[in-house]
Length: 192
Image (cartoon, rainbow, N blue to C red; front, side, top):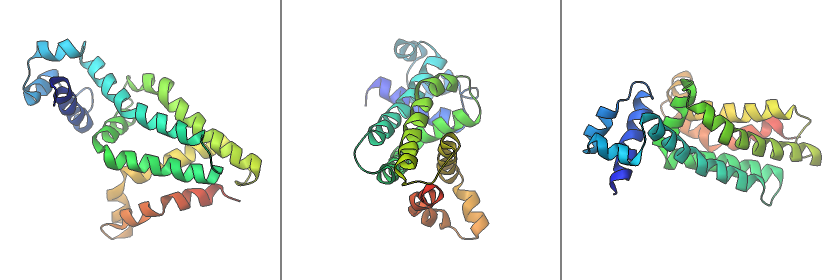
C-alpha cells in the first residue's frame, strides 16, 4: 500500500467515525505512521483530504447510477439495477458510505460541493428513469421529483438504520431479510 493510500485509509475511517470537525490531522498522521509534512505533500490541508475522500467515495457510485440510467432495458429493470448498485456500493465500501452519510447528516460545509457536483447528477438520472417509466405507462402518474427523493430516502433509511429496524421488528437480522426485497418494495410504490 502506498503512503498516500495509507493516509487515505486512516483518514476515511476517522472521518467516518468522528466527522470532519472532530478528526485531527495529528490523529491521522499518528495512525498512518507518517509525519505532517508527508501528509501535506499529498493533501493541501484537512479540508482537501476530506473532499478528496468524499469525491473518491461518491464519484464511482454516481458514474454507475448514470451508466445504468442511460442504459438499455425497461425503466423497471434499470431501477432494479440502480438499487442493486447502491446496495453493492454500501456492501463493498462501507467506510466510504459511512463517511458520505455522516458528512451529509451533519451538514458538513464540504458536502455542498458534492451536492452540486454529484448528488444532482444522481437525482437527475433517477428522475429520468422514473419519468420515462411514467411516460411509457410502466409507472403510475407521479410527482417525479418527490418520487425520486422518496426512493433515495427509503434507500438511505434502510442502509443506515439496521439497529432501529431490528429493534422495531423485535428480531436481530430482520433488517437483512427486508434488504433482500427492498427493490420490490420501492418498485411497488411507483409501478402501475
